[in-house]
Length: 214
Image (tube, rainbow, N blue to C red; front, top):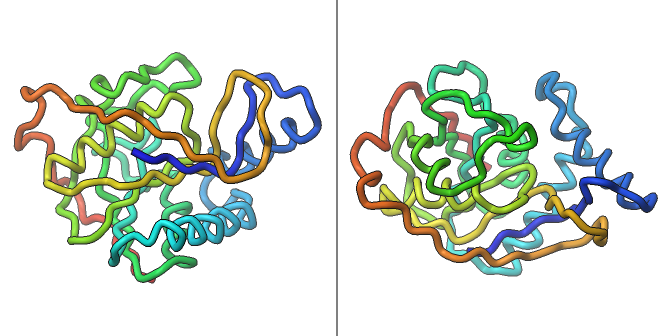
């Protein structure tokens, strides 16, 4: 699976560019609400994503699915923080639909606070809340580190026979010095969850999904 990101930052930034990249990502990941975010950064992400999508010539229509943040469970009334990023992709790309279809069974511990990053563990706590239309599926996240969340999301979508061909992430976290800005592509090995987890219980329709068309 291909994971494309546009900003790379080190956990312990040293250079001026690395520090700027880290601050740039924080401006998008603010927890104060969508209205408090750096809207210019979100728009930039949408424009960069449209370039990547066009280059890959994905078969339309596109179905863009935001990956929920750790607090976005089936009992939450708040949309995922990544929804704004997904909507930016739709705004600047080819005909596409945003389908807010993934939720955690219960709130998860954030990765930066020691939360699990294993794809199987994440998959076991992830559910689909609605069906998806036909099309090329792309998942969107804010930061990719090990790729566990991306792989778990793709596996959850595969339970309803929707193959995810691409993940678009604003940033890639690194433990070493890296180029701060620039398109970066990572290939993740396929993840096949245990068969015991592939059941009808993976879909729990608890609310009307957010559907956004370009």
